Structure formats: C-alpha cells, structure tokens
Length: 310
Image: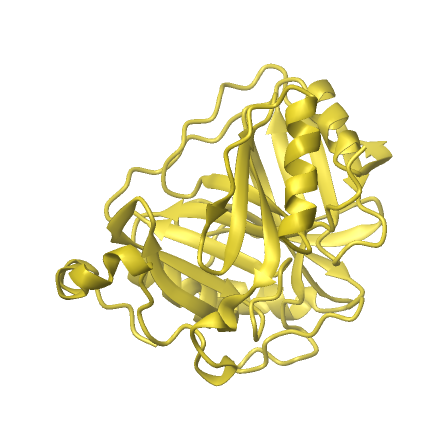
C-alpha cells in the first residue's frame, strides 16, 4: 500500500471564457489567482491557478479556458463535484453572497453530518462548500470575503462512477481508508493528510458516460512531499499494473499521470518547488509566466491571449 499521498494537490478543469472564469474565482469566490501561465500543450490557452495566499497544495483550483468550448455532458466516469472547505457557520453568508452574484444551482444538504451548499460554476461545473474545521489552514484574505467565512482550501471531491468497486480498491491502495456509506455514496479518507483528504464515490449504474467540455474536470491531482516520494508512488503503481507517464516538469511541481478504472485521469504532483519559484509572494499571479520553451514566442502568445484583468 502507498503511504506517501497526503490528500489532494489540485483540481484542473476546463472553461469557455477566461475573463468570466477569472472573475468568478477571484471575485465571487474570493480566491487568489496565484499563477497566470499557459497550457503546456496549447500555449494560446491560459492555465490559471486559484488558491490561498501562496497556492498551498490542497487549495488550488486550476483552469484551461479553451475559448468558446462547448459545455461538457455530465455523467459517469468523472469528478462530479469539487468540494471546498469553509469554516463552521459560514454557509448562510455564502448562500446570500452566491445568490447576490446570480450563481445558479444553490442547494443545501448534508452528508455524514457535514452541512453542504451546492452551486454551479460559470460553465455548469459542480461545486459544493462544506463546513469544516480549519485544521491549521488559513484562507486568502485579500478580497471582500471576510476571514471567518473565506474558503480554506479543498474539502475533497465526489466521483460519479458506473461501478465504484475498482476505484475504491485503487484508493485503498493509495492509502485511503474506507469510511462510511450513506445514500449510495462511500467516503474514503486519508488519515493525517493536508485537510483536502476525502474522496466520495457515488455509484450511478444507469447514468450515461460523461463527455468532457467546459465545466468538466480534466484531471484531479494528489499531493506528495517531493520527487523521491513521487518516484516511490510511480513504482508502486506500475508494479500493480498501471500505465504511468514519466515524470513531467510542470514548472511549479513535478507530475505523473495515469487513468483509473472508472475513467478519471489521476495525477500525482509534488509539493515542491511551489508557485513562488518565479514570483515573490506579494505578486503571485500578476505577470504572465511562460514555460522556458515558449519565451522566444512571448510576443505572439500575448497577442493571442485575451486580457483578463487583475
């Protein structure tokens, strides 16, 4: 069994409009844009990162805004809901705030005793705010969202699957412990993780297969401390029969990828070197940062990218 994984690192999704995406996460949700860079495989497309003050692993939501990309089709084989943690008692504030901002899909429920507020992202993304303890995490306080209500980071994620058994087995191999089952949803939890440490598996046997597009999660990343730990995870996965990519340098972390039995793309990312490797903390996310191989083409890339403001 793998013991190096500490919870979620980041979640990467796709969007239709960069300006709308940036405004939603920085203004409506009050997260900090910690990096403005480009897709490594499509430099005419932004890669935008939002999180806490420094982009702590376990707090970072990232997006590829692919212009006028059609919306995704919800179904099985995807991350159905990305969950953010907020302090206890914060949901009434968020219900009012999100309603004021015209956010759709507002719905209250609870799961395993945790109060939750569901809402839609700009492209129909599935999100929920979950009341949680801080567990040493501090929110970004550079917006109008008060500290006592601000997002702490991820709580976890809920997967929509046709058959949850094989993914559950994989999660147990990755160090997650099977917790409780309620309403057809089984929770898995990393003990001693980084706070972003729950995965819920929802089995939807009769549902259609999801189709990726704007509003879909592209991949979900799990955190390890460093490259040595990452190599241990890679070897363990490959020894078990998974097809895992070589280690890829993503400038702010190193990454490996593999496809799960349920169809979801998993990444294992390092906590090092972090988002301050090329910007000081006070100015994270302000300048356009390019992978080294694209620097000679900066002028052309800047012409192609739409302005998104602060």
